[in-house]
Amino acid sequence: METSNSQTTASWQIEVPLANRLMITHLSKGLAALMIACFLIFGTVLAVANGLEGLIQGLMVTLGMGLFFILVSILTLFVILRNRYTLMFKIGDDGVVMESRVDRAHKIHRLALILGLLARNPAATGAGLSGIVSERVEVPWKTVRSFKSYPDKRAVKVNRRFLPALYIYCKEDNFDKVVEIFKNKQIAEQSKSK
Image (tube, rainbow, N blue to C red; front, side, top):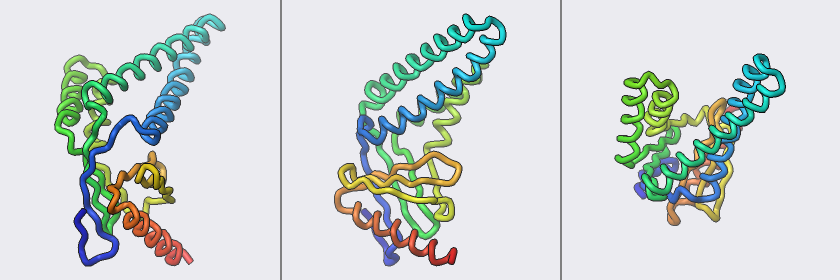
C-alpha cells in the first residue's frame, strides 16, 4: 500500500476471490432484479396476447433466461477468470477509484462489444459496453451516501446515490486505515451539512 502525507490517501492492488459471500450476494441481487424486469416485460406482452397461458410462457422464458445467466456467470467466474480478479483501488481527496487489472476480462468485454455489433445483437453489445464501463469506476465523495465495513472479509461497501454499491476489498494491513478514512469523510460531510 502506498500512502502520502495526507491522511485520506491510499492506493493498493489486490487479487479478489470471486466466490465470496459479498460477490455472490451482489450477483444474486442483480440477477433477481433482471429476472423480475424480464418477467414483467415478457409476462405482460405474452399475457396480453395469450391470457393465462401467455403468462405461464413468460414465466418459463424468464426462468430459462435466469438459468442461462447463471450458467454464463459460472463459466465466466470459474473457468475464464479462474475465481480471481485483480483490482487496483485509489482513495484520495476527490473520492475512490477502482480499476480492473485483468487483461483477459478487458479482451472479453471488447470481443462481446464487437461480436454484438457485427451480429446486431443488442444484448451482447450491451454486455460488452457494460463490462468496458465497469473497468474503471470513480466514486466522488459527494456521491457516497453511506458505507458499511465487513472486517471478516476485509471489505467496505460504499452505498452511492442512484448507483449500485461498490465493494472495496482491502489488504490485511490497510483495512483499518480505509475504514478510518471513510469515517473521517462521513464526519466531515455531516459537519458541512449542518
